[in-house]
Length: 356
Ligand code: WQD
Image (cartoon, rainbow, N blue to C red):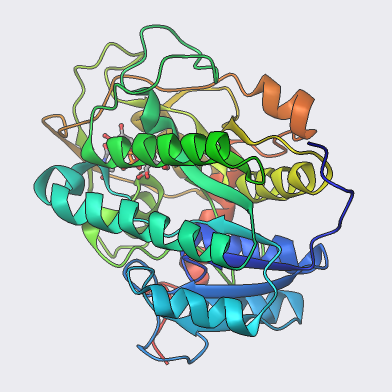
């Protein structure tokens, strides 16, 4: 069923105060969309009421445009219904989820409940209000430990090596089944590799609210600025160039432009359910990224080697050619840009976002 060529006006972003959500809000506003955001501050900085949180204050400063913000948890359906009662939502970009590979092994029920029930609540309310368009934040972790590289969207999924990965895979199954049962659904799942870097203004960036949620780049920044004594490298016995884990790091602003491309695709075509990879197709080891950060920013990052982290795999990097040919998306930045932009955010905000 071809979508009539309608242009979306208002986009709801769940987890809108988070690292990826806030950066995408910049791109959406600058592309002329209205942005409505909801967040419960589980992995973002804010006070617990409808006060615009610091990351979204930064978004408004960068764009000069307003964000409609709601504090709330997707586990409470009424919170979502309230938003749909107040705004005509044309498409939802669903970022909100617990995201730590390591943490998910220790609290699996929290991960299954939060990541799956939130998604089901959201889908039920979307259906209630006749909104059938979604861009879903999925993950390369749905591929598990790949037998061959690079990973394409045809690579096997369903053998995730962590509870986190299994929640993302199961969410995709829910979306695929829903789009099969009801043809109105029009959904793109974006399988992120490793987002890194910050907006080039240095006004917004990545501020993990707990160690479990921190990715590699924030640790590099914290050691370089003296907030942390050394980097802990988890394992140097992987089957990789230097024994440390290899990942496909993608600049956060390339990840955002991938979301815009997916939105445009859904605006103009009816896909039912389709996944795409978002990565730059190049693997970097932990030590290679650390060295790049030191070189670009003229800093030193001492490190210690510890044993592997549960759930980590040797290497992940993708072939995102169908994102390029079908979404018209192409990454613009490389690891040095990610390191340079992250360092600007870190030096301008040594303690990250400050509470109001
Ligand atoms: C990267 C590499 C670590 C920290 C992330 C997101 C997850 C998903 C996939 C989207 C690994 C090593 C890290 C440190 C280290 N993205 N490392 N010392 O685990 O790949 O997962 O990307 O869905 O949501 O969290 O990212 O940055 O934690 O680890 O050696 O202090 O860096 O072992 O090889 P990960 P990460």
